[in-house]
Length: 332
Image 1 (cartoon, one colour):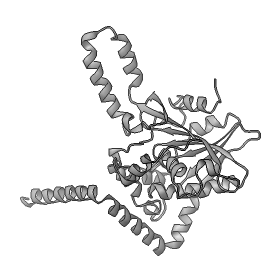
Image 2: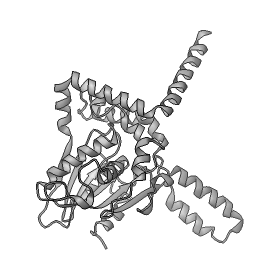
Image 3: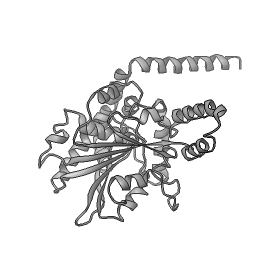
């Protein structure tokens, strides 16, 4: 029994050393993960090919004389529920809606290249202009798509036969400056796989076919990916919008109004504001969501509830949805 504390200490030291080493060797860690995924895919080529049939752009709603073409892009370890409210609301209007499903644990640049290829196919169907709506990491995938010079066609250079022109990018809960919680992505992966298990969609080695955690490294504040992405100018032909969530934001505003004339409480209110902004939506701090050159709207709610309801039969309107409808010109 006396050996247990020693084993525990050794385990803690090993985990600590591993985390510290990863912080200094992020790109090497990322490359090892990519190599591992590619090796597994080559070893189980048939299984990987079968698994990846699920990926791509799928039509959710098509209509004649559409006012807008909207493409929805999910984030990290999302099992498919994030758009269940917004997609149905959009379908009530003359709007074409597509949903992108992609290997979300792979490197974000790889996902953006995959997205580019899917949009080329969409362009071949006669769709020449689109609005992109990205939740969480989906906003970063979209930004990489629009700004990476290696993806063949930038927004102002796209011609017929290449890909549609993105007139607008709406980012909902996107960690434009990264998220410290990306280091805990293993828990999100576990949640995703459990969801697939209960829905009968769990596949052999699916947890690695959709990426080996490279995206989690890209999402870490100060990562090579984020540094490179944020150094690029935003494409001038795309309007960039940010919707950021802050938990208890409505209560905060109400408290500020009620205590507006209480000078002695001003330091308390300032501390409360600073705390809530650091918390942000529980996953993404407000400061991390901000992006120079993009408009910013703040709504009340957490990372999930600003865009969807926890229950499928709930009639609550997620706080980001009215803004999205307004951006699309679907409401006054």
